[in-house]
Length: 449
Ligand SMILES: NC(=O)c1ccc[n+]([C@@H]2O[C@H](COP(=O)([O-])OP(=O)(O)OC[C@H]3O[C@@H](n4cnc5c(N)ncnc54)[C@H](O)[C@@H]3O)[C@@H](O)[C@H]2O)c1
Image 1 (spheres, protein in one colour):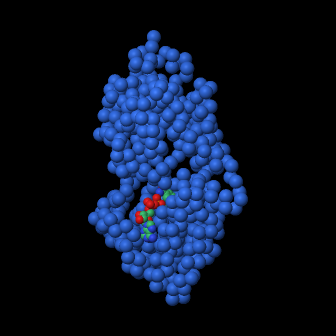
Image 2 (tube, protein in one colour):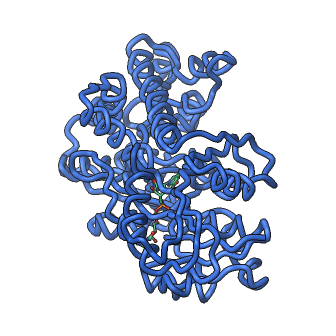
Image 3 (cartoon, helix red, strand yellow):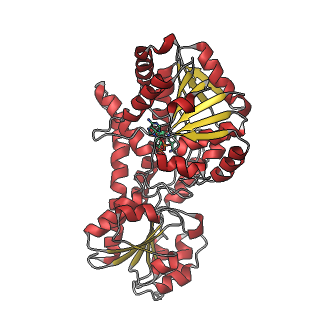
């Protein structure tokens, strides 16, 4: 078994740590935020991710995990150092490598033996060379620090499962021994291991995320057309998804992509293109479509309510995706901002993300559940498709509202069932056909004859 250090106890760092510990390695986490270190020492996980607390506790008790802010202590016996620090976009979209550079410098200062450096953070093409350069210039005791690029493809909310059952493991390196050693860590997972050079590994991560983002924007554009032609995009994407040439995932129309990865990685790829004179029109268009999705929802609200001034609008779901408390680039933030600009009162409920949202929008009324959101609201917007929103008593929700209007930003509900529950319903390219709508509900909530 190996000794592994992981720099950065965020989503990726913590998941990587517990999973390698679960595979019987000894893992030292190095985290610069002392509050996080204290929490972790007490067994408190500072983020929400399925199965993470249980795996942390089990491996902590087994003595396979430790956490510190001290690089010398955290690197003492390490053979592998995984860098999993944040790489946010700067104002012009360029990924900010400040944290990668600073982690690398700290490694160079503290390392006292040869170690393999593994870059797991999402970093632009050429970053492994930058990291290798910083380490080479430090010339620490003449030790060698080969750099391996090992991008992470996990999905928040499914992160432990994804780490343990990867579709592929990418190991990019110019040093064959280092590549073999990192590949060996993943061998028990029984996944295809792709060995390549560092640049290919770095590019593969950006290309993958930009492709996922483009698929979502593609179906969102089709959804706009479906609205105009009275076609249900949910059926269209189902039909498309049955084609084995492209499959069904990331083909759900809705409010668009947000979160910690797709927005910044799309910006990062566009910036990479710009800096080499490659215009990337397709990916720019995907980004543009995504930016307009909250406005599509606002337009739907206007159509149903007229002026929004003084209206009370309820938001169901705040986090960027279900089963996560992550609010980075969450669509709800854009929607709330637009509602506030139109003079609306906003009420909201989310199972996990209300505390973080309140830091950005203290002037939203945060509710105990969806029923409290519905009470007195002039319309609801479903922003995040949490499972619990599928189980709601929608008749009761409609009866509590001032006007029983719902904009389904994730196409979670069946338009006809919603009409039966008493709702005026509109989804994203997903609504009852015009004939069904006429049989449906009038604006005051009474059944139209
Ligand atoms: N979150 C995801 O779903 C996901 C998936 C795949 C890849 N990634 C990539 O992985 C990287 C990390 O993402 P994340 O979401 O885990 O970030 P995060 O912000 O949740 O965690 C980063 C952690 O690193 C710590 N840190 C920063 N600099 C440090 C330093 N010099 N020394 C010690 N600790 C330091 C921070 O305090 C923070 O706790 C990013 O490049 C991201 O694009 C993220």
